[in-house]
Length: 137
Ligand code: UDP
Ligand code: MG
Image 1 (cartoon, rainbow, N blue to C red):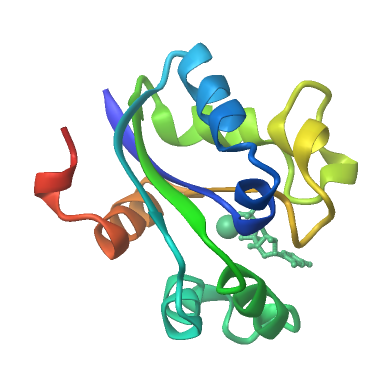
Image 2: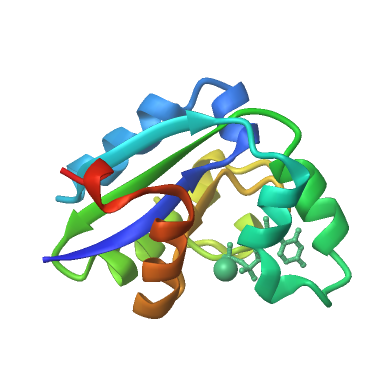
């Protein structure tokens, strides 16, 4: 069993897709072991996406991620990190496989509904950015 970090992004929370997205994670065998709704500040979004600081989309992305409530979660399961990325689909919903969350639910490249850690190292950093060890049960 391993852990990964997920965000249901503001576009999906606003459209009341939280339950739909968590249902897909659970249906795929993942367990929601921590869950919280929050409204990120711009500074929190900038810290979370620090790896993208030099990218042209950084300002728009962090503005969007702090534009409304999102839901952050820790998912547990066999190979949770790649398993959740597979369920999410490609970053750009136009390139995402049929049946993936981004293909079926995302709005566009930026408002792509979900986040998932891209490696085990990222998962550890991202989980600890939003949760304490005591939150994970
Ligand atoms: N993003 C964007 N424009 C781009 C690439 C990414 O707005 O050209 C946004 C999008 O919301 C994406 C996030 O920035 O999910 C982080 O980008 P990354 O390349 O890490 O994609 P992900 O890991 O989320 O698939
Ligand atoms: Mg990423």
